[in-house]
Length: 101
Image (cartoon, rainbow, N blue to C red; front, side, top):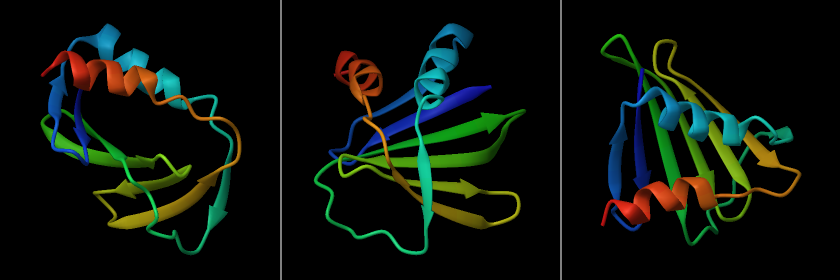
């Protein structure tokens, strides 16, 4: 399993270490989501997490500073949109991307 992290400002990083990938994915677990039909594009910063399993991209998660989340299933081509209803802490993702500069 590997994760491709991308920030809208252009920073990109691939994580292959299990502890690192687990830390990123576990940071998403406490998020409470409300499904929506459409997301407004008002964010200043977005973070994309692409999950690669056995050499294939399987899922993508896009998070924004405006508490929007989009989940993409690359195998089925489906996209789900959510509003994050609790506090979101993007610091873990930011930490990895900023340390890569």
